[in-house]
Amino acid sequence: MKADYICPHCRGILNAGDYIVFSSRTNKGGHGIIMLHQEVGNYTVEKHPMFEYQQGEKLLFFCPMCNKELASDVHENLAKIILIDEEKKEFDIHFSRLAGEKSTFKVVGENVELFGEDSGNYMEFLGMK
Ligand SMILES: [Zn+2]
Image: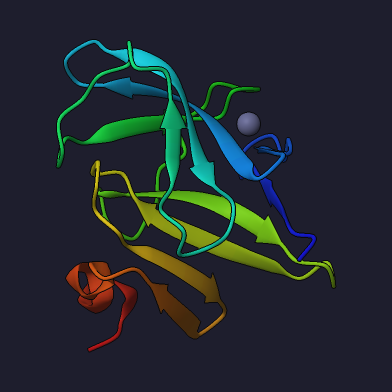
């Protein structure tokens, strides 16, 4: 699948190779580059071992081009980017910014697709029950 992920602020392309690239910070002052696998529902994460955080810790995700925070308006634990599929259709992708939590939502209009074993945690915030 030839999909691109873009920043909702500057519309810069965030994916390179198999990964989506972010700049990230923790509330404890840690910072680094973090790469999430671009296949929705694949939770492989690549980062430098010097960028440390605990499981469950909340990470801040920023666009590496415009440095704006990629916050979701659905829930404070989620971050948001835009997916453009091969037919140039745009989807909002909301994903958990808690380290290790597997929740991803692909939203277009009223339709929400859920991915990840922890996605039930946010269903009510997406208007689903
Ligand atoms: Zn940007």
